[in-house]
Image 1: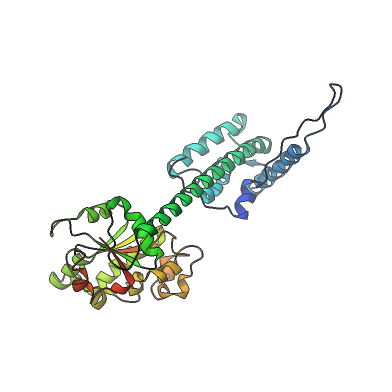
Image 2: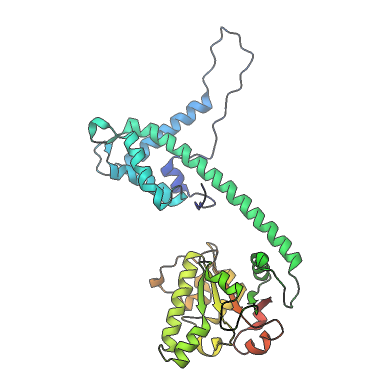
Length: 345
């Protein structure tokens, strides 16, 4: 099912609740028996069936909250919701209708729709097979996508090498971004193709990308010219965008436009806009389930109120400027750590 995200591996709790199994029951191979012989029982299949029946019984008992021997619609829905929360089988638009349909087919019409254990056992076995098939399919799709991305990265390394300015077409942008970050550099994207007072094709691309954009030139105008907000207010607003990007796995893009905004000298502050955001190795060490943001620079920025258990693995940072490849260094060297950036034109 397109657009449904599934974890790479399910937890033991999910397997226990769904009653899923990592083993596939084998099919008995016929031997050279005569017509009069009685075929032996299919032990693997029977064993798997009994095991599933026991799991269904345990799940039924667990979700029968009031212990009245039947599941109400609310209790039945909880079974589906708990599994769905872990494996992403259904999206928000689908789950309500799915629950109603399953309950309608499983609940007793003569008993106000209450689900009895015998009906639940058969439904649960079918549900487990359905979810297992979905998870297996999505895992294969994710693996194929990862392999494709790895191949693209390998090809990108051959196209984007060296410490100078890389040249890149828009359709190769993601490959160039990956190559820069694999190299331990934060991408500095240079696009001087648009009008000075309008959006460049690259800025237009990012404006429709759904990522978090921090328009530094706008903050310079608001803080230093219009005086409509203080530096602290600007930092706080930027911080909100940064935290949201970390939570949801957005790319954080600093837009410099055709200016050299006072990023380091005015806006950088450890508790709100840390300069280390432009240090790719430090960002890389903080993201993902294996990352430890509490041991790095983010420990000075994130608080309990941010409710971040981990920084999303897709979180990344880029800088965009309208300066050309032959002039960016002259304008930006005082405010950006160019030695940590990879210019891409």
